[in-house]
Image 1: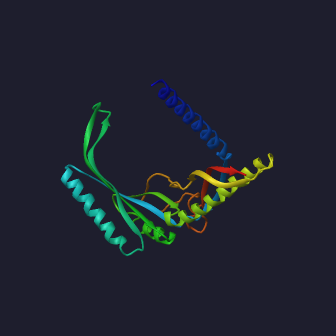
Image 2 (image 1 turned 180 degrees about the vertical axis):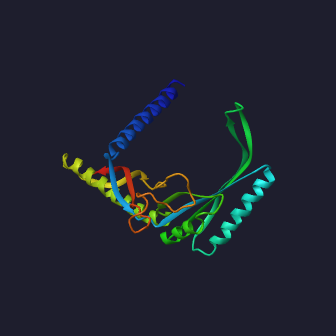
Image 3 (image 1 turned 135 degrees about the vertical axis):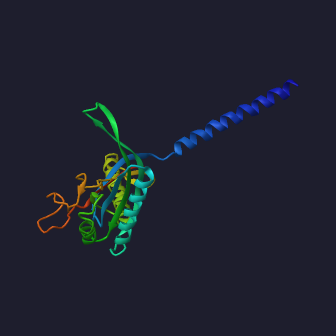
Amino acid sequence: MKKTFIWIGTVIGAAAVLSLAIGAVERTDMPRTISVNGECLTTAPKDKTAITLRVTTLAPTAVESVRNATAQAAEITEKLKSVPVEMQTTQFNSYEKTEWNRDEQKSVTLGIETTIAIEVSANSITSIENVLSMFAGMQNVFSENLRMYTSPEVLKPITEKCLGVAVENARVRANALANGDGKVAGKLISVSYGTQTNDIAQPAYGLMRSKMVTADAAINTGGTIVAKDTDVSVSVSAVFEIK
């Protein structure tokens, strides 16, 4: 029994030494890597123009207020069918409207106010200008949030191309750092990235009731809405093998 015990212990000890040796080989074979950042800055054209038409009605009862707002929104939707635009309802709410009465020193109820907002967008600036003219002066209809933006269909390929540029920028940096040790950047092992755009709703000048937009920043001397291209920024964090 004693000899058997010693033999088993010897086998276990040999296995432990072999395991440590394999682990040492694996650690030796681990590739050297370098982690760097890369950036790309570009622009994308703003191909869409949009405006929000807001219907607001006030009536003594909720039924009457909702009925009036719905009827007027339906009228707007019907008229918009004659213009090459896309539209969607973005807001529909009804609530009791109150205001502070200074004479009575208390809050008084004015009625039930209902709001329906319809976002109208188009590929043509002229179409949106026609929409503004079409509803100028219409009672209970407000125009707001006039803006130009880049559609996802246009933005996606530009962003993907910029991503490739950012990765190449990271590789150039990796090579510059590796050259100091007489090495070069090899294959890309991993990469993570993020994108940013300044494609926000602009210009936004609050409510513009019964009139065309007149802000100088929004309309040039020829009466046409203008906007700068969308700034696109892509940043990556890449890990390269060093050879």
